[in-house]
Image (cartoon, rainbow, N blue to C red; front, side):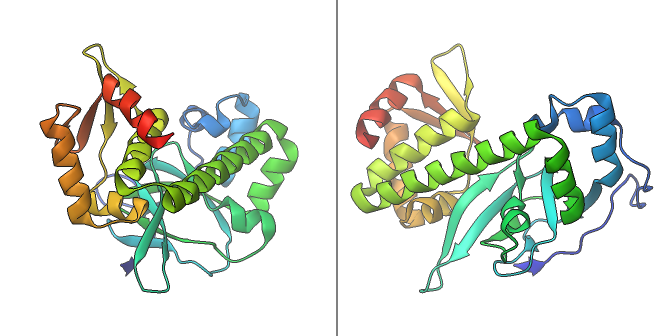
Length: 247
């Protein structure tokens, strides 16, 4: 993994001016959707853009934390390294998601490493500005706490599945979580989700890439899912079957 080189971004390779972005841009983030124009303008004043290339590291585990990050475009993986040196992917985050809040709230080092899995554009807010935003906007504070709680529940669910389920059950739960978090329901009886790589899935459910590939091909032969490029189409009846496997 390469250490990041973050820059302000614009068009034609030129650095963007430091003028605040329009408030309508920040309203696209669920975290800020309920704020009025005055509150959004205050956030736009302190938020700064950064760009990262694929495989660039946004920050490492155990570093001190000083920025809060909102994903404008692209995707990151939140990772840890096991004692055996194996990468464990805790979460994949995409546009509209945020990260980096824990170290700002508890003043402890970063708990995980965050790496861009594709070209990435972030909006970043420094610690003091972020804490002031939370102090002045309870709705944002509530949403941040709700997301932290959701991630803790997800982590507890993953720990349970790793401890009690076979690999098929863990894969079933993974697909259920993807369908719930990002699935787009289609009229043809399928749910469309963006597919991580087989290696990324393996690193999230604690198995090998070869095992993931074999199980996915088995599901494709049963017509329970269709894989086209970066999209997987999960049959709704398959999701019902996955719920039984993951229960």
